[in-house]
Length: 301
Image (tube, rainbow, N blue to C red):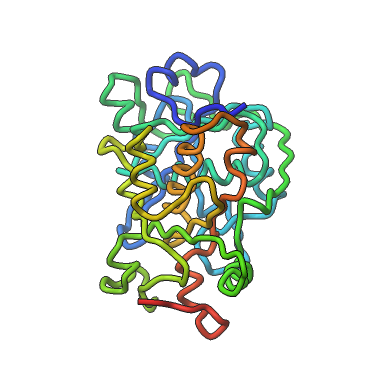
């Protein structure tokens, strides 16, 4: 069945012995912040760092594209994660975007153990009085680095991922899938610039704007219940239908993707596989789309 993918600090504190905790923090390049160094300076005790730019396809210049199943398995196995591990991901930034991206990545590679996000991230964990540590990995009493590696088997579930060619096909499909764009409204409308130099702003045909910030509750968590369903409905999204989620580079799109799954779970019960059916993330997102107009990408403003 569907294990709710949002957990509280209290739940995590009481479950530490039975879960693997990952810090999935990532920052936009223009911020010039080093998430790995920040992890070393402050982390939940015993956490491992999941770098979406390292666990990625290195054959492309596009940022943090999904790696092969073999590369994913090698990295997460080295983190001491097996297929039946319950993984809890937190984000130290003021969003849950990177944590949601890591969760989606585990789902895309068929993780059979539980996978959850710590609501409120590191800031809420610390605010509620739970322990954080800092210092070089292996120097803190009670932590074990490097961890004992585990055997991991991964297989890509292509139904959760869209490619550029599939997005082009969707432009002309008889039964088009709605594209949900998680970028800020100004970038969607083409009135604000993209943060990545050289890219036009605007949006894809047959898309709706749902800035991911509209789904957050103000405390680094997601809306629930009627508020969540209203936010999705106001954006023109019918959660019973299929949709493709996009953003700048596939990070915040994972928030809107997860929000639809949660909204579906409010309406009916089901397994992960049932609730995520028909919902996917365009991995290359706007960074790829806006750079490939000569290859058939269309931009509206």
